[in-house]
Every structure is written in structure tokens, then in C-alpha cells.
Image (cartoon, rainbow, N blue to C red; front, side, top):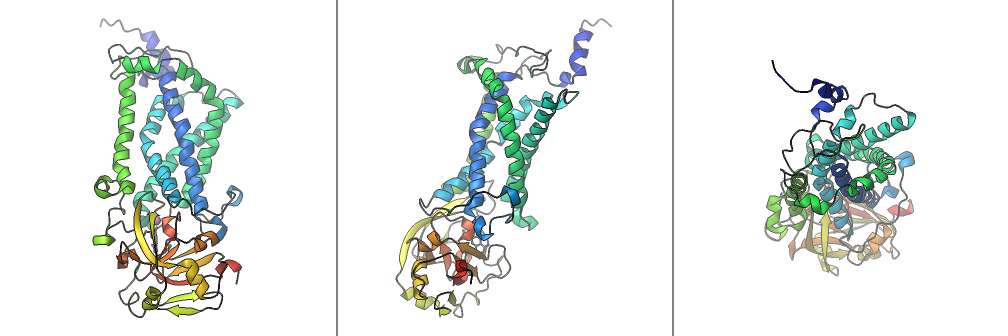
Length: 430
Ligand SMILES: Nc1nc2c(c(=O)[nH]1)N[C@H]1C(S)=C(S)[C@@H](COP(=O)(O)O)O[C@H]1N2
Ligand SMILES: [Mo]
């Protein structure tokens, strides 16, 4: 057999596992571009995630997980202004988190020979780098998986991924910080090793392989390019845009909601003015027409309470209208016009003039979201309502009839539906 393939040059990279990774695109430049994108965007996903934890009110033990030991964050009163604050926070966290998945995968692809380097470490410093890399990559993939599962399947499995997601975040953060500290100079050099303009002008035929260096990312024996660098960037960017199209509808609403395929519950809607996403239906929550019917009473506790009010009495109190979003932790949101009684007016009815935190309880018996502690500023805000109506008509049973909470910038989950009682002294440790 006449074969002039140089056997010797094949064996050398094969020994370091390089034979399988021969793309001429692989190298410091492409890795640095993906790295730079993630360097700017992943901190946004991380910080909004941690803020979301604080918005849940860990000071009341109602963030998940409730006890996080030394990972406890400094908590503060989550603001009520602007009313879209949590909507923006959670839209960014979930939306950006999903959109970045193709970039994360591309970045991993670009450094894949690294994971097969042998021996894995030749010095203590290198060993530490490797451990931080495992934390970074493992943490990130774990966050993506638990995040997506949380959006898609939380209720199917009947348990929460929040706890895993919270601890996973800290593993990722530790790996990310170390990785940045180690790699920033390299990334900077990588970004400057090619001109982006030049790359965007170069087609596949003219695509040159990256220069080989021992211990570098570029292969010693690159194959012919199957795609240009700009093609690779377009592919990854296109993937990100595609995911954006599949998710944006969950917040933008209207007809775009039909494109929001990554959003299982947000598509569930009611009729007419009550036609907007339903998180948990009355049926799923075990709310019967009877329990929500004429026999329903709202019980006010604390101060001079208890005091019972039926729905007719509530309707006779001064009514206030506010345009406010419901923004779910899962990323979807919807803005509606709500009408009802101000929470601070209800507090005043039982003689509580200077509101403290209040505990709202639903008549729903078993759900995980059947009660919520509201901060004092949330009770006091003039737009914080016990809503009886939405968009000018009575709430539907699915949206919380006879009455539900709606508070500006409050995480969706704490806008309790089918309210049975409000304890205005709950925060005073009675
Ligand atoms: N009693 C009760 N209230 C609840 C829930 C629930 O399961 N039970 N779900 C919460 C969640 S997670 C969200 S996002 C909002 C959604 O309100 P909607 O179904 O009217 O859109 O209701 C909140 N109120
Ligand atoms: Mo939610």
C-alpha cells in the first residue's frame, strides 16, 4: 500500500488526545470571543438570580431554601417601585439564562481538548485551576439543567429545584471568579490576536487555521474548514436569537405568546378580560365553587381583629385601580388592570395604622404557595390591593376569585389567590 500520510505527526497529537479535535477554528481567538460574551452576561444572570432569592423575603424564612447557613445573603426590604422591578429582574434571569445556552455550548466546544489533557495537572497551581474549571463547567451545566427543569417540570415532579439551583449557583460563582482571575489576560490577548472586522469579511475558503502551540487549543494537524469563523459566530448567534424568539412571548404577550414554546404554564389562559396566563388553576388548587361562593369570608387579624367581611362588604369599601404586573419566578409575566381594596385600608379597619409585615393566607389548603408574608412597605404601598376585579370584571375563579393579592414589584408567587385571611400583626411576633 502506498500511503504518504506522515504517520509520525499523527501519533504525536493522538497521544495527547488531539486527533479527534482538529477543527481549524479552534484556538484562542474563538474561545476568547465566546468567553468575553459570557464574561459580560453571566454576571447579569447570576446577580438577578441572587436578587430573586432576596425578593422572596428570606428574612421571613420564605425564600427557598429557607436556611442556607453561611451562604446567607444580606437581605433588604425589596422595593415596591418601580412596579416592573421584579418583572425585569426575572425576565433577565430566565430569558438571558436560556438565550446564553448556545454560547455556553459553543464555549465548551471550543475548549473541549482541555478536558482530555493528560496528565490532568502537573503542578498544584494547575490542579487548582482544574478544580475551579470543574466547578465552573459543572456548576453552569447544573444551573442550566435545574433552571430549565424548574421552568418546565416543577409541578410534574411535584418537588422544587430551587434548593439545588441555589447551592449550584454558589459552586458556579466560585469557579467563575477563579476562572476569570486566571484567564482574563489570556482572553485579552486572544481577542487582540485577530481583528473582528477581518473575521467578518473572511469566507470559508480563506479561513486559516489558528497557529499551533504546544499546550494551546489549536490542533497541530487541522482539517479543512467546514465553516468560516463568521459562520460559526452566526450559527451560535442564530441559536441564541432562536431561543429568544421562543421565550420573549412569555413577557411581551399578545400574539407572540403563541411562540413562547419554552413556557408551559404561561399559555394556559382564561376568557375575555380574564384571558391571561394562569399559574395554578382553581381545580388544581382544590378550590371549589362552594368555598369561593357566598359563604366565603375574609378574616382580618391583628389590631382590633378578628373581623370578618363578605364580598359585598368588601365591594362597598373605597376601591382603587392599579395597572400592575404578575411576574413569575419562571420568567413569564403579564400586566393587567386590577381593582380592589387597598391593603393599608384593610389594616386600618382593624386599627393597624402603621403597617408592619402581614401574613396572607389562602383558603387553598395544601399548595406550597397558599400563604405569603408581605413586607411592611408592601402592605403600605397605595397600589397594594386585595383585588376583587381585573380589567373591569370580577376575577375568574382561576385568577383568585373572590379576592387576591396584587402588590407592585412583588414576585408572582406571593400574589396569593383565593385569600382567606390577612394577619396584620404577624410581623410583630404575636
Ligand atoms: N393560593 C395560591 N396563590 C397563588 C398561587 C398558588 O399556587 N396558590 N400561585 C402563585 C404564582 S407562582 C403565581 S406566578 C401567580 C400567578 O397568578 P395567576 O395564576 O392569576 O396568573 O399566582 C400566585 N398565587
Ligand atoms: Mo409563579
